[in-house]
Image 1 (tube, rainbow, N blue to C red):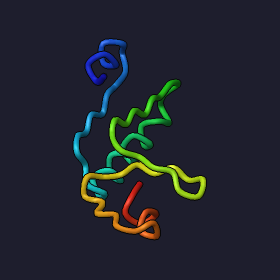
Image 2: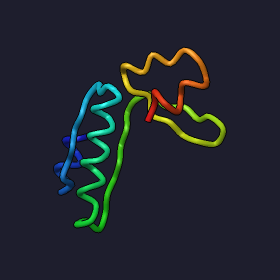
Image 3: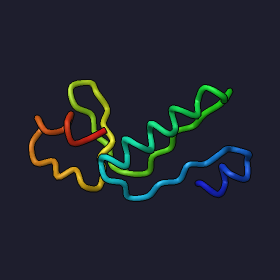
Image 4: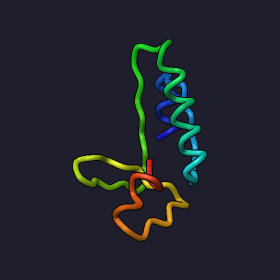
Length: 75
């Protein structure tokens, strides 16, 4: 996906197997670059879940054991 998007002219920020802190940093970096763009795409090929109408991306180190941990251990 990264290769194809790069060939189409997108600036690609590729990250793999991120823990919570690095996922937060990567999404912040992505958001910081949005002010100078017309089109942006956020592609996540990993695990996610929905809880009480909110969507969460699950980092590799989440260690989620109970539902009440999701808002604190997921993105």
